[in-house]
Length: 235
Image 1 (spheres, rainbow, N blue to C red):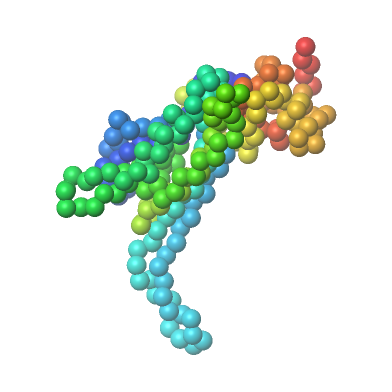
Image 2: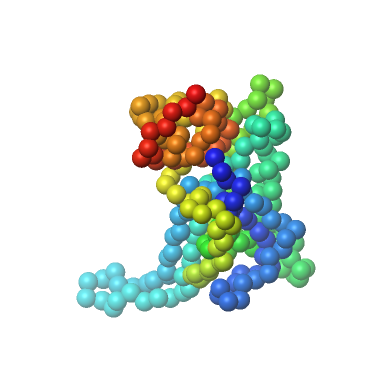
């Protein structure tokens, strides 16, 4: 599967939140994390602070404060190819959760401001929660795969846009239908069987541009809903 040209999402520290797309805050390159696998989806929630309007015939609701925005996503990290502890990778994400001293010693410690960017999508906020699930271990007990659920929030509603570049990837943008992660030892046939589509494994392999459907890298994202129009033979 060709993936070298896919734009990867990233988390990067920023000094202050951006007011608009035309004045994006400068990123702190020292603390930047590029994801291994792009998230399957992003959930953006917007809310307002309103009051009143509860009594019949009473005044209509009034806006009494600033709006707020929240982003939820899940990231996958896998080190089964190297055998190293996957937490060395997720620790880089945990940096954005931990409170840090401020330039002004009178100010309380607070988590870093962070920008999540994936192509033209940008969200800036603070990470409220990070839930890490370790779901694959080596025989020696070394955690090799982790899913990390993040929740970011900001006390404002601002739509920010970045410059998306295809990078020569053509239609292969990494943002397609919901994808399933291959487990260690998985093949296209075994993944297709799990969703009751055993007969379609060849079409699924072809649609995902899989060179070797019998051997998949653990964590590889496969669109099991894709089917090629042409029949392809392997082996």
